[in-house]
Image (cartoon, rainbow, N blue to C red; front, side, top):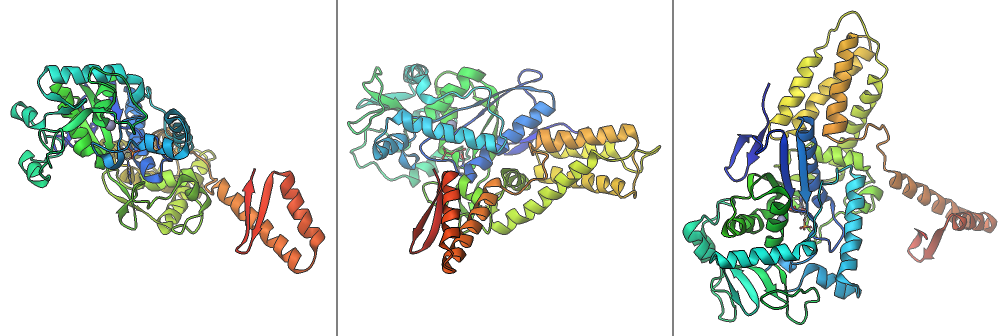
Length: 488
Ligand code: AMP
Ligand code: ZN
């Protein structure tokens, strides 16, 4: 049988996966910056690594999965200076930064739960690891790869590249990078425009600040992940993941920091997920072309004709390979809904199949094909195609066109459950319609009935509808544009 192969960004090849310690895997994935609600693009990335985690478990590995929370140091435009994304939101809402962090962390967890995404083994936050970050900054200075300027500490990329390879992950050449960056205007403290901050001096506008040997400041975004990954997984661990947009500079800098701090290459396998797009453009908070989790549920978005359940959206995302772009659209989601329903109906039928003396179906081949597809760099679309061979089998047996023995039925049931429920993480439910979308439709029906009652001068009925809804804490709001509703 085939062995697990992973496309490793570091080598640009699919490689056989060998864990550092037998039967154990250490995996780190860059988590969200908790300054606003996660969107479905973010979900795609975390879902892709959920599949990696689930499949490694299926193969019998024990996995230590670390996914961080970035709660400081991620500046606007992923830049090296300017406002902190969380600090900005805190000022805007007149909240403590940690209130912003807690609010969006809770929201993130709710979304992960709704999408049946397994929680990580450890979820460290950057602000919880300030001491370790200061220590690493000092270590990099001691090794001669960073310098202090104006209370900030910068990583010396040119110096590092003399003895190491900056660009080994992203394939970027330092000469090209240099010629593409504008000359410093003399105002900057950096020796070279490519240098990046590993510790940043907090000017007066920065509300998130800590004492350090270099004065009051805060850690660099790239540094956080180096510290949190190696603290819990060791200097070198098995898999490091994140979205493609993090490959450069974030992950490139992570490698440089680890090596400059006297450690080895942090991860053996680097995995990058491709972007979820909308009308061909990357879905992104900063661009603003975002479909929120709520809108997907209710269908309350220009792109959508109706709402979809999390199970359907999960199925939709898994119908494409994590390394391909995926464009979200109402028609694609509707097609996935039909596919998901068919698969889930077959899961129900499977429970009621009758057995025979002999089998006309090959369940062993089906199981092997499922394993082979996942061993090929977690190829979920191919896996789903094989699961539909299983659906055909199930429906054939139910229609007495095929037969199956008791032993084979046990194996078929195990294969379908293993891959549909455990590996793909789909909920075996035939209810694919979003509950929220049902609520919305019902509410629109009540609003319409009340309007008709009013138009017919049946005010008693109109009032009864309103009062009944009020007793359910649902408030109707009339305006010139029509009636909307709100749950209090
Ligand atoms: P952020 O909170 O912006 O740091 O993003 C959290 C994770 O979501 C990162 O791994 C990003 O690469 C990933 N991500 C952001 N936008 C998208 C998108 N449109 N499609 C897939 N992944 C994304
Ligand atoms: Zn990171």
